[in-house]
Image 1 (spheres, one colour):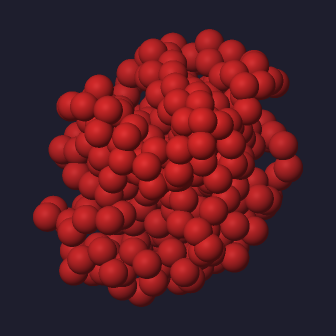
Image 2 (spheres, one colour):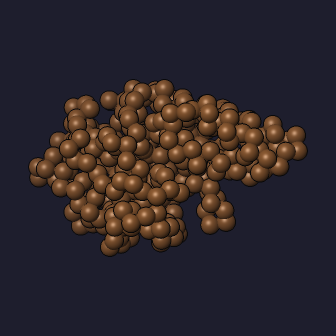
Image 3 (cartoon, helix red, strand yellow):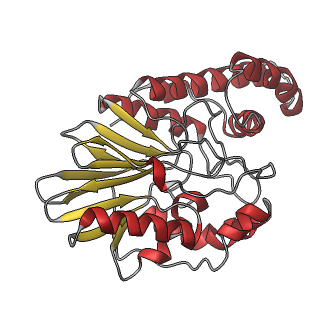
Amino acid sequence: MDELQSTQDSAPIVDLAGICEIADGVWIIPDSHRIPLVPNIGIVEGKRSVLVIDTGMGPKNAEMVLNAATKIANGRQLLLTITHFHPEHGFGHQAFAGKATIFYNRKQRDELRAKGPGYLAMFRGFGENVAKCLVGVEFVDPDLVYDGSATIELGGREVELIEMGPAHSLGDQVVWLPKERIVFVGDLVETRVFPIVPYFPPDDADVNGNKWIKVLRRIMALKPKTVITGHGEIGGPELVEIAERYLTEMGQQVERLKNSGVSEDDIVAQLGPMIRNKHPDWREPNWVESGIRCFYSTGYNAGATETTQ
């Protein structure tokens, strides 16, 4: 979920011209032009099946992704999984219904059922370009769900789906390729984007900074070589470390000031400019304030920096 609170200058259209193979049988449709609300999308081949990771926003984007995956699959079975329910990652899933087996975690399905219509209405208010992408969106349930984790055997290649939420959302999951040590993390990690903290009380306040820190440490414990972020360039494990350090420092600073009796608004006024100035080349500075307010609401738990499995 990217640049929710600003007008879209560029249409959030997936660019198939940038599709590339980053490892044998592992394809990325990248966020190569860094257009807001365009995610990094994955296609992973096996001898028997091909897995698509995220759809882009709306049915037209998803149809383009489906066509690209169908060409790569060349007759093999298609599967679709989604990193989390937010519109630019999963609100194209209807294009895959009946053409692919849709499989992801139960918490994400339940979150989509509860919040999907509200997020659809909210995103349609983010400008004409976004609204056009969301024309005709219909919600469909996955064909299969899992709890905790699941392994997909594509034929000579295993892919692990690991439930990670609540963090950025209640239903976050990562997609882990253990042999290649590639992980698709959705919006748990971005590249040169302030961590997207969708803290919108009272409508949606399920994002959890403390648990997000724990999740990032779980991802680091996998020892990935390649990290496919939700938005921005792909990279190595340092991208996860940067996100963990950012959230940890923010949580510690907010807690220190809160315990000193500083009000929420004054903490935003004091910390916000300091944090933004520390990362002058990062996009979406509006998320700094929501991150501060999230940690103020939940408090910072020092135990969040402990590694959990």
